[in-house]
Image (cartoon, rainbow, N blue to C red; front, side, top):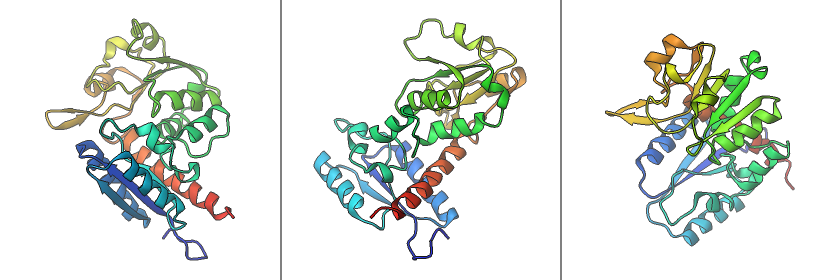
Length: 259
């Protein structure tokens, strides 16, 4: 199990706010993964908490030396602001890597706990060294995926473009790219017309169509046309889940050195 010699163990606490179905599915998947890894984990359910109540919960967990990692399941119901809430988690317990402090460390090339989805994409990209010589296009600029991912790839010497919903004519970027990383939330949006045959397509999209989970890429068409593609489900997702536990271990080692 995940204990060290002193008997201390890694312990992940997930805060779930409101009643979002996606948030429920994600948190349960993490609890299941934790069980498999022998990691202690629990969920604090706050279906209708005020900001003050949530911050009190965060403060208690921050002060509790037995808690290694704290994460808030996104989305949170308005008027609550996800970014505001995570900034109250100490950076060394922010295993989701989404706080301003951990995001800022990426820009300063002092990466510590990095957001899970970008970390998963970086992990996949690292297996194909030729992508460093090519052009990589990220289609997303959110603080959870596109922004940290673009900085993490720059830190690793990739050449990147970042597109988003206001980019006119995305195809002029995607057609010349050796790798496209997409997270736009439009089911089966990317087809063979948008990509060149030598392209590596990393699909970060999660969409529901007739009760089935599909990505942003039209897998049936693209898998016949381009060089390689990650499936949805089963591609980026499982690696993302693993990255949270990799952060948990980093956090644990860091906290052992704290006075």
